[in-house]
Length: 321
Image (cartoon, rainbow, N blue to C red; front, side):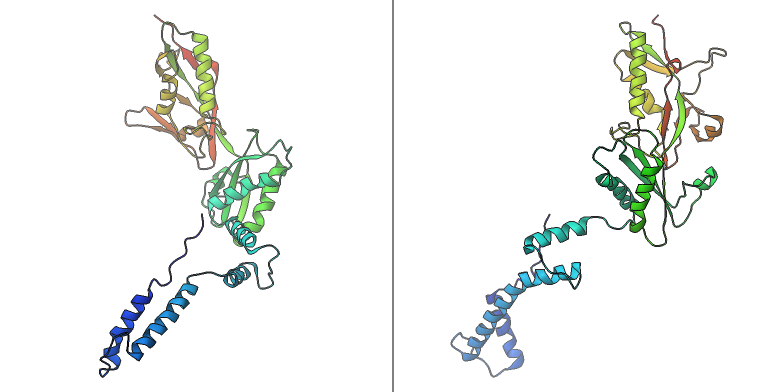
C-alpha cells in the first residue's frame, strides 16, 4: 500500500492575495487603494503567483528527492543501478523485511523464514514457531524452565513431520537468529514439550449407530482436535499454552453422528464416576476443579502442547438398552 503524501500547503493564489491585502493596513495606513490597478496590489499578485508555484514544487517529490532519500537509506556510497522506480521498490522491500528480532513475533517470523534457505527437497521444515520471552527452556532443570529469566528468549519449533526437530535444524535456526537478536539477549531454540494426558469418557449411542464405528470416529476426532499442526478450534494446530477444557471435549464428541449424549466413565470396581482427563501424578496439580469438585480443565504452560493419548479402552460406548 503506497504512502499517502501530505499536502504541505493548500493555499491558493486567491488565498495568498487575500492574505496580502489584509496585511496592508498593519504596515501602511496611507495605502488606501487596494484595487487591481494599484501597482502595489500588482506586486502582491506577482508574489502570490511565485509563492503558489513554489508550493506546487514543494508538494512534488522529484527524482533528486528520491535519489537523496535512497542514499539516506542505503548509505552515502550508494548509486542507482536500475531505474529509480525499481530502486524504490527494492528499498521498500528491504525495509519491510525483518532484520532484527526484538518482539516475540519477530523471532517467530525469522524462525519460519529459515524454510526459505532449506533445500527444496528437505523433508524436515519448520511448521510452527512459538517465542517464549524471559524463559530458559534449554535448561536441564525443569524447575528453572518456569522461573523468569531476564535477557533470555526461548523459541519452540514444531516441524512438518510432527516429530521432534533434529539437532541440525535447531542449530541452523539458532545461527539465523544470532545476528538478529539484541546484544544483551540470549536465544535458546528447543523442541516442543507435550503434556501427556488420557481422555476417559462414555458415549451413549443412538439405536442405529454402530459401536465400533462410533469409537473409531471419536478417536479420530480427538486426535485431530489435539494435533499440533491441524488441531485446535481454527484448524491451525493446538495453540501453545492453551488449556484443555473438558467442556470442549464434551462438545466435540456430542456433535458426532450417532452420539446421543456423552457422560463420565464409571470405575468398574467402585462404580464411581472418574475424571474425564487423567495425568501422571507429577502433573495432577495442573488439573483445575470447580466449586463442585468437577474437573474443568488441564493447565498447560506457555511452551507446551497437548499430548493427548487416545486409547480405545478409554473410550467406552454404552450398550443400547
